[in-house]
Image: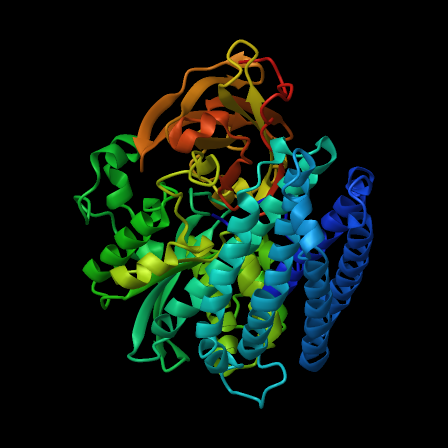
Length: 620
């Protein structure tokens, strides 16, 4: 699962994200407890316990808000004091619902189910405050060096030693999630159902967040060459010419980690690699049927598939065959990710050609690298060199240690959440840990926590027009009127072209494969939930035929969409949500995976209607 795929704050540390989720949970429970006061009043003194529980949780919510400020301002002493106060409040709330009177109330017919649910929610919150937050806070401070003697690695070595405590926090977060996951909201009072479902979702996300952090710390020492040097192929994806994982892999470099120190070994661009006569690695027949053998022959096409481990393995083998050294894995970044990293390094300067801007900052990086670099005069080779030199300037600054570790951690988290940072290891044990993280760039084989849907884009114009693309998507679960237990997903995606009607140079217009060189052509791949498939596809309201195949146990439907300058096209797909894990009768929130574009996606999602609820739409 991804760590908050649908709505992300721009600048939050890992602790800040968890604390924000915890604050929301406190507000939910603070609202939940008074709702139970009327029925509880008939059970004598339980009303007083409920009132005191409310008071403690309200104080806890206030402390959580203050704690967020302390974390963001890098005040570890204040943050630890606030965590201790928070623990006292959640422990007091837990005490109120743990007495014999309340326990007896949980065994009453009818009302007992509601009291037990409140008990489980309060207990889970106390476990998060006691066993999860302190460990996450400590790890974050160690990683960023906050409150520690200045470390030339930015506190990274200290953070790695905290992996054990985060492992324990992971177990506690999982226990808290399991405790509330066993509650059946449909068995509760109507007023409690929606709040409890929200608590379940938020604890699920918190557990996933801590689990991902623990997995990262388990694999990071090896990635950084703590025990032996490691060499990585870094691919710079160009989202002005989209590929499913983010963009055409243009510039690349090879970096070496040894004992946490980073050095650049070599660099180049995709034009240095001629097509191979045959795929460099054996291709799965289903993969070959979808993308042809070009995925294994052309360096620019290895990531037509959204599966980054497949793309990375092909790129690494191409690098080896062209005379490069064998690598331990591959990393992918794009200019948007570099702009995030520039928040930590500050502006950098580099050698630029005549008329080019050689000063790169977080504010101008995307425009310079994906627009200005292509519209100014110069040969294709000079444009590729400009991109490569800019990327090297950023990495040289990182290597020199001239960066803010807290801002760097925040940047890395944002890159990972948006899947602008991807990682693959050639070592199976490491790769198993990486696949628990969003940086794996891989849809799960099974949809255990809810249906996963993928919308992935490949440029079909042979041009660099995708800088001007704007995308929105609405993902809505629907229940069919005629088949009430059948769960469907309606996916409405709009593509808007802001390509100017004239004035672009030939290098940007490229091959013009859509006919009109200013018309953008997108090849859209829609990945259905496991066990499901496409029921219908419409483009601008008219039903269309699509090509289809399978990749990693999912049906893949492919449609070509041409977008004239200034135009908007709307693709609507109705997907069967599948039958895996009994999902036909569960109200689960779908998860959406998309190709990272220059401007990101505007995304709207909604939870599925629960049993007995009216369907969102009768169209099936």
